[in-house]
Image (cartoon, rainbow, N blue to C red; front, side):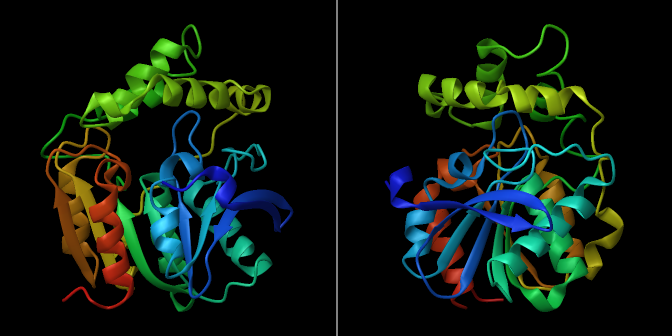
Length: 279
């Protein structure tokens, strides 16, 4: 697997916001947008995918605002409006006219918002389990994973035990959650700037359920059958609502298909970007 030092990590000014990102490879750009949750960042979400994708594409893994080494900004407006605006400014800053976008969870929601608001700049989407509704036929809401995230900074505050429970709720096989992963995410989640921004007002949650028909770009939806963070029927909702979508469901897989089934996920994404996925 690719080492972190094999990726070129740097900063860009995205409309006055410092955005940290890693870049590898050449060719048509692919943006990788990670999910939410304490200690989340681009490398943690996509360390298994940057190498294979970068063999064919200019692959750019972005730390979203408030995460990783990007600016810890305090935002009180709608979350997806803000984040998609920052990514648009980031694309301008690093010279990207159009790109494919891969988004996991919240990153997938941001990817859809980009495609809705500026379809001329987004070529194709790969969406990994983005929750798009506050209801589910399959799963009690809020889901287990969302509940773990919501209470992480509350009550007695962050702890290694909380982090371990949270990460295990996102995986099908708890064995993939190593002590090193728990420690890494816990350290990131307790950085003083991160603690400060999580004590302040939070951005408003924003649903795209009423806008899904406007997401016109070709889309590959990827879900884990055993996802305890984003309900599987949200994938079926996206399949029904998005005008140009196809759905791949992994058995024995939680919220991180790009991690738990990395090799097959990478092949799926590359085939989709290269027009080898049939409609």
